[in-house]
Image (tube, rainbow, N blue to C red; front, side):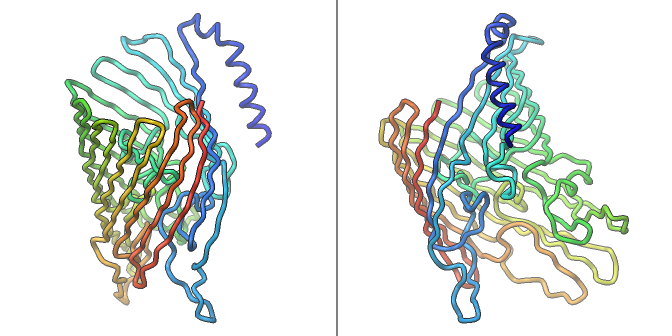
Length: 405
């Protein structure tokens, strides 16, 4: 980590020193970012990431030998791992197009084990013609519609109702008269698929890599003044069983489809954003859904079946003035129920999020005060309720300060 810090400092010094030369060659550099200390407290244990700063939903009731729920009870924490630094490189026109590149990192790490380590968020090249755009590198997961990102306080940004991830990809956009057609082919890195690796449930890029197919997404969007609407379709293909130990394993593939309708409207300083999804399996997008792997005990044959969630969310915020109240509302319904498979000739493994809950909902009001000069304060109350057989809720209280530059 010390080496990484030295490299960043050296890079900053070199970039500042070479700024004049770069500008003379038609390049310009723009550094920006923020520091964001964040305090949060939960009324029970939760399923989440990065020390549970990224909250998905409360854990179910688990009783100890005395009949006490081990997941019940308040806990609190404070982190500053979302501190972020980004560099935009604007270059000269080439191939008849405007060119630029962007690199951004923070300190959340790629897993809980690497928290506080530098993590690559974005790293992409952008080539922009009048009606066409080509982007290649690491960018928002294609089912994340960043134009309608909920402006909630914690790290989850509306997850698991709103997808939230970044993936290496090639993205093409066609733009004309307010209409946009988007096609994306993407691969995996930090957000990996689940499956059986050498006979053990695991998260790995191997399940997607062995399929030879990138995850494919298509979008149709329309913009007119304050209105933005669109639809998206996503197809993800994986090989659910991978063996690297030399043991024979089936190589059949499984494809999951996800559909989305989204939009936003801004009127008189009030921004309304909304999205609905039919997600068969968006575990990689930090969302709901997954699949059941059913293996024939007497052979290597298997069947993979998705379980479906219908998810809808809306975010409303005042986006002008010093005081900016807002609220996020989310609801997800398990469309296939929570009954476990019981065929004695089959062995079942469940992958993804939410197969043991019938529904999930969240109410999340917030209030931000901004100086409009880069300094802001946000307080938020978040209540998430999970419909297990014995439903439970979690109350999160959070407060953060942002200093943007």
